[in-house]
Length: 358
Ligand code: PHE
Image (cartoon, rainbow, N blue to C red; front, side):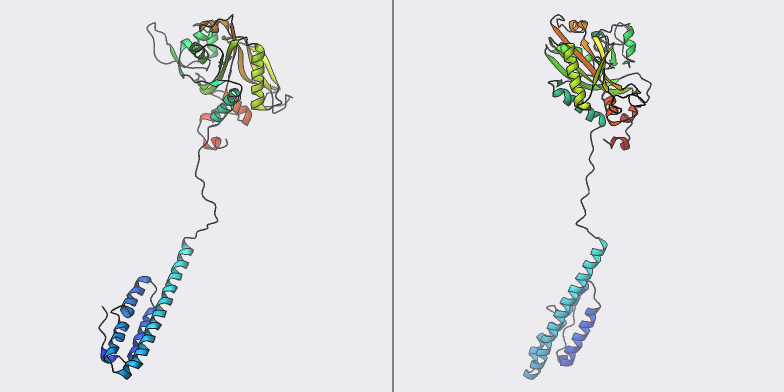
């Protein structure tokens, strides 16, 4: 609390002394809080200089004239010094913070981390898109399947040696007959029977999905992987339709100048059965010394064939009236060919260094 001014000391000297003391004190202040205290002490409503000016009225006229002028000048001076000091302290604060938290507004913003589609998902979509463009519809089915659909309906009866083509993971559940009727589907072909049971021709479906096999894993074998199945059944579908459709697919996925080759192959649910190859895009079909196609100039990309009459009859279609073709391909294998991936196990080992490349 400032002392109340002693009126007897209001002389030019005492005003000057007050101003000098106030100025000196101001010089040493370097924070806004102390500055405000100083202002209240000298220039506040009950401040020391304010008190002096108020006390002037007690003086006689001549003294009042001289001291009044001095007092007003002192007030202006202190107000000016206060303003300068305030500016100086603010500037210093600004300079300090600019040095500490330097902000470069020209820097580009930080990109948020975004995920991406798994390479298998990407290639499955690419494959499906190619067939959707040719009038096929996407359908999906169960991964836990009945022996009935995975084998029986596909012309692979119990005890048939063709069952050895699929190393099967069985579900640990017996029926009354003591058999194991459930399994993890070994391919997407059981969906052929399921789709045909649920609709009448014309059928044009594409079935992407996961499959499982009891497999010793290596660079080209996984115990779980994807397949994309295709099925077209209608009045008058021929082997030429199979070739034309799959040739178009190969061109869409692997380039317009692709050549294709069909060779006889055996699958119990098609007749005739084929495997389809494309000419090697690494050596342009030259073959010799090519690692990708192992010197052959050709790369196998899928199994296919005309739907077996027994399969058609099994779902209640008249094999005399309807014919069709089916095919199955492995998207991981397609992705390996397209991107030069040399180990199928990379797909599902969750190594971000691998996955981030796609
Ligand atoms: N499902 C067969 C397999 O997994 C592939 C295939 C599908 C062959 C359709 C012919 C027709 O090997």
